[in-house]
Length: 520
Image 1 (tube, rainbow, N blue to C red):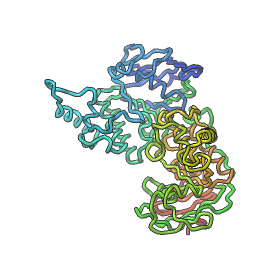
Image 2: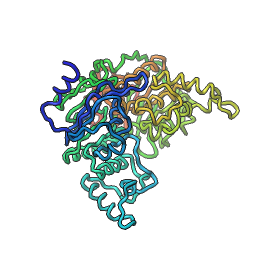
Image 3: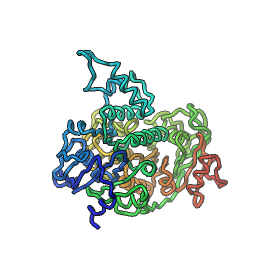
Image 4: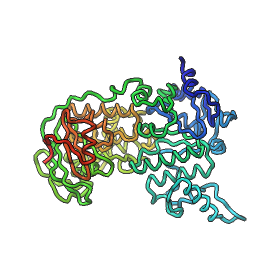
C-alpha cells in the first residue's frame, strides 16, 4: 500500500471536510521541505500534526496560513478549491493560528489587542463598549476569567495564550491551528487549555494541534498524521494511538533506541546537599549526593520543590538552613556568577523566559555565560575571533541545525533553541551540570540528540543532576533517582528499586523502604 492509499484508508468514508490539502510540495534551494504531502481536517475534530523538527510541520502550516506559497498541490476549504492563500485570504477563509511566539502588543490592553486593526466604530467614534461586550461573551463561553482592561504585558503566558485563542474566535475561525500550545505551561494551565480545546471541538471548530506530548495526544486527538523529512508517513485514528508506533513512524526507529546505554562510573563526590531549606519554603530539609561520572535524577510533581533544589544550588534562591558541600568544601551559593566560577552551570526549564535572549543571535546567546573568561575578553575588549570559534565548537557538539551563528535564536525550532541553551555550558570548563527539564517542549528526535549529549558528558567524567517531569527520561537515564514531595527528598532509588511504581509511591507519601546512600 502506497502513501496515498494509506491516507485514504485512514480517512474512512466520511466526505465532509473543512480542509483538504493534497500533494503539497515546497522546495528551498536543494532542500525539499514538503514532498507531495496531503492532510485534511473535519469540522469539530482535533487532528494532531506530529513529527520531528524539520519534518515539514511548520512549512505545511505556513502554506495554510498564507505565509508560504507552495510549488505544487491543491487546497480546498469547505469543499471549494481556493488556490493558494495569502495572509489576508487565510483570515477571510476562517483560518487562525496561535503560535508559540504570540502576536500581541504587550503595551496595549486585552480588549485593544482583541480588536487591533479592526476596531469597531460608530460615526467615527470608537465603540469600546460594543467591543467589550463581544469580548466578554467569547471569554464567558470558553470559561476564561481575564480583565479586559489589563495590559497584556502583565498577563501570565497562559493568559496571553487565551487572549490569542479569543482573538481567533472573534474572527469567526472555523480552522484553528495550535502550535505547541502547552510547551511553556505548568500542568494546571495545560489542563485548562485542553478543556478549552474540547469546548472548541464541541462548537464545531476544526483544530490542527501540533504537539509532542503523548499525554495530550491521547487525551484529545481524534486522529494523528505523522510527517518525516517532508513526507507523509501515515495517519492513525484515536483507536490506533500507541506511543511506540508513533515514535517509530516519526523517527524511523523503535522507541527503545531513543535512550542510549550510558556507562555510568560514579567516582569522586562532587556535590553533597544536607537538610537544605530555602527562604521561600519551597525546599524543606532536602538531601542528596552527586558524583562525577553519573547522572542523578530528581523526580517530583509540579510544585514539589524539585526545580527549586537546582535553583538554590546555583545561587538563584536564598538558603534558610542546611549545608552544601562541593568537592568536600562547604560552600554558600550566593549568585550564579560564583557558581559558574566553581564550574557548575544550571539550565532553566523555560528557555524563553529565563534562558535565552530570543531576539539576539545564536553567537551572543552562546557566549554570554563566558564573557568574563580570558578566552573571550581581555582588558575589557571582546576577542571576537575566539568568541566565534568557541561558540561554533559548542554548537557543533550539540548538533545545532541550521549551524548559523548569525540567526536570531527566536527563529529556531524549540529543539534547536534548547540546544543553544545547553551549549552555553560547553563554552566554559563546566564539570557539574544541573539540567532542569532539559527536553520540555521538544520533539523525539531532538530528545535523542540531547540524550546523546548527556551520555557524552557523563562518560567524560562530568556530574549531571537532571530534574525532570518525564518519568521514563529520569528512570532510563539516571544512575540514581531522588523522589521529591512537598520540598523533601523522600526516597533515593537505586538498582532494581528504580521503578515507576516506586517513584509514584513516593509522590503520594508511600516511599519504599530502601537503603538511602545519599539522604542524611
